[in-house]
Length: 134
Image (cartoon, rainbow, N blue to C red; front, side, top):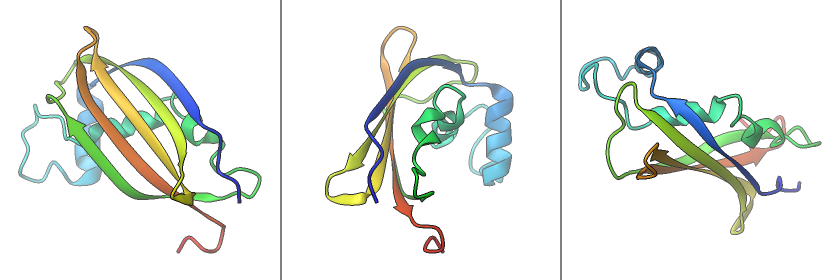
């Protein structure tokens, strides 16, 4: 099994859409107590991995072996919270994890339109052969 090549995508412009945050809260049960409707959940930026321009980070992960990427770890590091309606830019990078050849790391760097860093997050995926990802 060979790791996918390194990749850099962006910067990509996006907006923290009120409806997208509401749907995310409902889908993840974050709307059940604990957070107000005007707060953006800390894990919400993970949805931008499915942005049409960012999707390329996953498009070739399966490779010729049709491997299955399974999320095994994620980390969010905020300098300030996101705001509803805010316009941002993000850059995504992808690289193999040298200590574990079956792992791939996707990192996103999020900043405001003024260039100030808002957050960085990392997601690590382990690539499994079909039939082993159970």
